[in-house]
Amino acid sequence: MPMDNPFQIIDARLSNLENLILDLKHSTIPKLLEKPKHPNPNQFLTKKEAAKLLSCSVSTIDNYRRAGKLKRYNIGSSVRFKRTALLGMLADLNKQAA
Image (cartoon, rainbow, N blue to C red):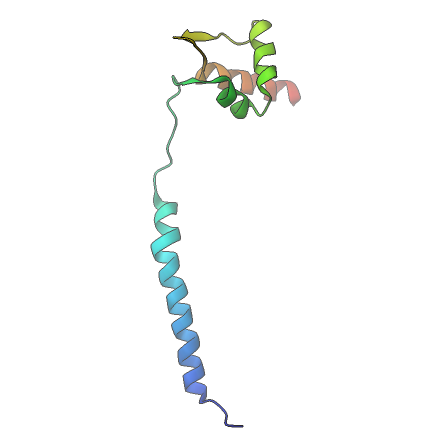
């Protein structure tokens, strides 16, 4: 059984490494260098989006609204909540949990 030339083995491994590095350079690194997208603090969110932001259910959002903890805004026939109010509520919930 013939043995491969060690220089060919090293060359093949170096080529594989080079390809992996180029893949990282062209796919992963540009994503890491992108500026983070900060949402608009004055943005209005749906009930579902509000629930996702607070990590709770939609019915919990309704309960907060009924209890007067969240103000709702009617935009046309839709109900929306201000992101700033939700973030404030999230900070309050975190303080209570601590």
